[in-house]
Amino acid sequence: MKAGIVIINKEAGYTSQNIVSRVKKTLGVKKAGHIGTLDPLATGVLPVLIGDATKLSKYLIEHDKSYIATIQLGQKRDTGDEEGKVMEEVEVGLLDEKIVKDVLKQMQEKQKQIPPLYSAVKLNGKKLYEYARAGEKVEVPEREIEIYAIELLALDNAKKQIRFEVSCSKGTYIRVLCEEIAEKLGTVGYMKYLKRTKVDKFALEDAVDLESLSEKDIISVETLCENEYEKIELNNRKLELFLNGVRLTTHVKSGIYCIYNEHKFVGLGTVEKELLKRDVVIIED
Image (tube, rainbow, N blue to C red):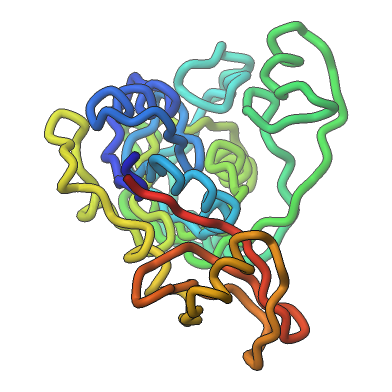
């Protein structure tokens, strides 16, 4: 089975799982999984791991992301986006560009954020949207996020819309951010548009449309890892021990390492207190 990652330019109207299913069918693979869910209305960068590369998701899920979003002011919706029911509607006065920029600047910090009820975050084994659809009220715990940079791209007073670009930590909900920005402007709003432009080093220009996806678009696990981690070369005897879960003494600093045998990539290992142990082994046909 092939192992690697493909960077998909997701279209609107598909769930992230729809995209995974289509990737599996197109590439003829049995295992695949996406990194970082995009809502059906959202577009842009959706990395999909295939084959044994799905074992790497625990490392890649932590990565920072960048988006372009549009806030529609004057309405509050239950889902926080275009698909939701209108819960509140208010008149919006003339927007001042300087005030909008000042509000965006205020958001650029570490902060606590409560995930939206209409999300796939799990609480007590159930997804939040399952509680929301059943009309059940639950206490959703805050999580710490960070907005690294946020910039105004356009202000449309006629449509009462704000378009901005944001770079943020994992776990940030742009729908919630849009609502918070509207609130700081003294009104209500929802996320009308969202495009993810970057996941870690994978940018929109690296992404491929599903219609043109082929095997040549697969980035190998070795390529994915060798730029991130240092290498450890194991001889045949040590490789056998490593694969059997034996911890090997090594005099390198603690961390994650690419493991090689006879210059062939084997997978990832972790070192702690100068002991190397097996973590992710990649087997390709």
